[in-house]
Image 1 (cartoon, one colour):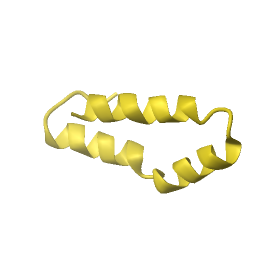
Image 2 (cartoon, rainbow, N blue to C red):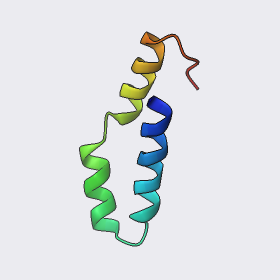
Image 3 (cartoon, rainbow, N blue to C red):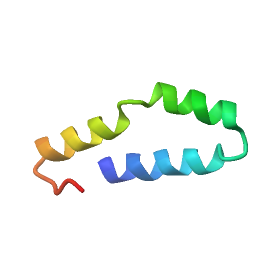
Image 4 (cartoon, rainbow, N blue to C red):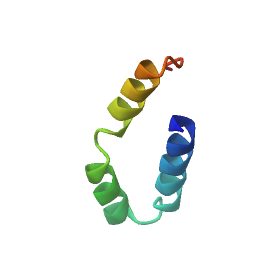
Length: 49
């Protein structure tokens, strides 16, 4: 599940590359995304990169 979330997150960043304001807003609302993924993978016993 976390892998799919990471793929979608990266896809969104790619799609927002041409719109700096939208990208900034996206990153603002997702500032804790990396910490969430790390915690989820740790709790579920998956390898954390």
